[in-house]
Image (cartoon, rainbow, N blue to C red; front, side, top):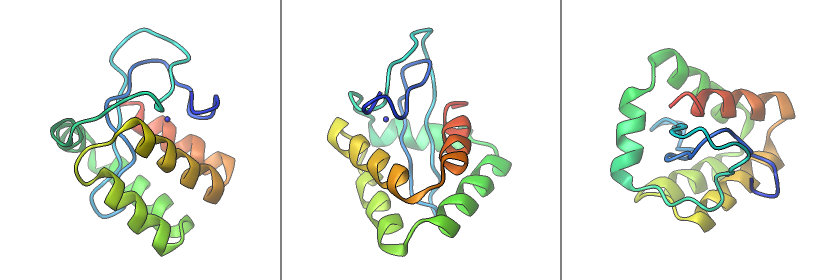
Length: 117
């Protein structure tokens, strides 16, 4: 999620940003660098696996960041987008929401967490 170079990360992220209540997940699986999340399609099953693998500490941190910084309607929008998996267009929408609503430090913290998985 490089969406215009914004969520550039090292690897093929297979999970996206989820709702605060359901957890936000993503992971890196390959050694590629500079590949963003915009071109990815993530299945609902992949999202569930990544969420299950995420530590409680990381889930709480993501929840705290998202719930405290995003307007409720944007949080609900992200929840709806990840409900049945994530298309490339949905990943871009999520990235746009995060970029628009989060300070750069918080955005980076979210990326750091989701890239672990």
